[in-house]
Length: 324
Image (cartoon, rainbow, N blue to C red; front, side, top):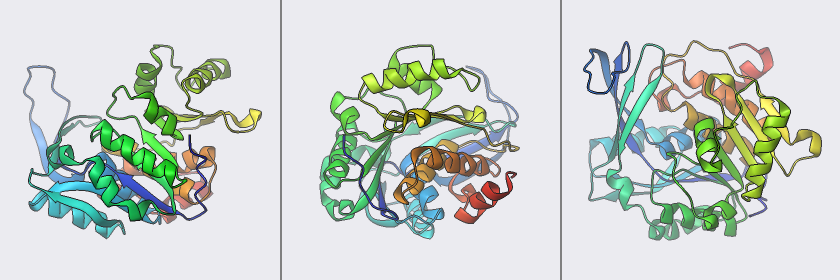
């Protein structure tokens, strides 16, 4: 693994997906084979990587995005949204394929289900990573997910490692990853389901799990070569498993931030982008997770994804007051 030696206030490189989110709102999500009535529809900028880049940009980070969109109105919307958050989009390539899309249903409690179609994201390749070599120079954090090919993710992780950056991998949507990618990953972000799949166990404790339960999970990740892991638990907060920290700080539970959720779409991306932003600013993993927990909670209080992401002042206000 790389040492993750990028300095304070270093840049972030996000490599991966940009999608147009086609979102329909409904009282409840349909059962298989069932049709339900919707009560609203919107087309918004999305895609895990674009979301993470915008989330970090809104928090004041210096962010570059590497990806691909189609030569269409959805691609233009995505580029405008990212640029509006201060993200450098010079290395988002125009592809012959249409812009990727996500079809999303959101119920009255803010829960969702999502189907994605890769489109231009499927054309992103290691050659695009090589073409963007300049943005990796001096980067503090490289942020990755699995909405583009494993070969591209691996190439970006290697570029980040070679640059001395902290490589952050959001293991979503879940897929088995090669050992080479695990070895290049400095910080792994997973939810409880992804953690269970990765470790091959159903024994992932909830927020009320005792320290012994989480200690076993920490050790199992460490055995797989992953020394720093954040497991998110939705409305139940998150757990930081940091085998590189002092013994008393290797297991830190982050309390949930209580809000009235309107739309949880992209909340995990807001969390990941916020973690990247704080790590790039020199924060510890536990402090980054605590900050990100607030950012993700605030992101659920409005409809949509990127437009709902908070600024740094919004998060710090909650940190200072303890209330949303």
